[in-house]
Image 1 (cartoon, each protein chain N blue to C red):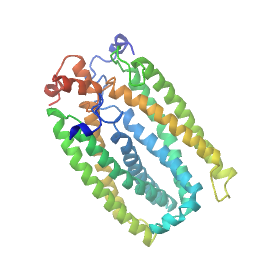
Image 2 (tube, rainbow over the protein chains, first blue to last red; image 1 turned 180 degrees about the vertical axis):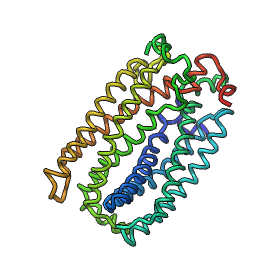
Image 3 (cartoon, each protein chain N blue to C red; image 1 turned 90 degrees about the vertical axis):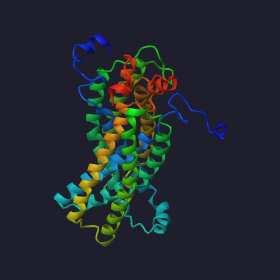
Length: 165
Length: 201
């Protein structure tokens, strides 16, 4: 069966470079910026920024599902070695959880906006802080997988294939 | 950079060649790219708004055209601000990079060529992003303040051109990490003959 799958390159990927770290731009940047817009909008009483926040959040939610799909494919092909495994597991669990959490919060935001787009309950801001913290922690874990453990990088994949790692 | 020069400051740095465990530049890149791309995307969505009415209606999504232009403006503005820090941290980290010399990337460039193009490209892109933000500001607050379509077509076209440059530039950056192992702890450990599995556990 495996001969029907595309061959893997020196990153151990069927395509040139990792895609997951590119798609997560749109989750990380949009969630953080949505929060900043809410915060500024809340304290300067500028509801126009709530709309900017909403559209950023909307886009983040679409992106997180795409990034989970690519993340899962690339995690499966990552050849994660002993030391990297626990971080990868936690990153995977939190990634799936975040897709549900983010979708839930965006749904809540949709309702808030449908009722009155000029108003933002402070409870929502509180939950946003929690969301931002989770996104930052998830980014930290993903950073570790790339920058500490070097998953999908040529030197590491090479060492694993040669059996030295 | 020449490793003798880097050693003048790097004596007590980590295995990744930095005074901290995770590089800062790639994290700021998320913000630069995400904000700029979505900014341009929403301006395009605003400019082509009449075409999307049926889709938005089908999804029961209420959308006001001018709000799309708000997203276009604020996102590009935020991208322009953050990118100064992206480029600054990028230069700090590129000056401390000591990649292995022999290999060439998938684009047939060696490590030094890749670093030079990525450094030059970074400053060029910063210039372009800031120019775009200023240009966008003039459209929003002066030239097209009262038009239904707040952005000029040529602005959107320029934006798409910059997205292509970002793709080239981002790939060079990805190659620095993914192929040359710049500032990647495990890759540097392997290079110095150590076992990441033992050291990083």
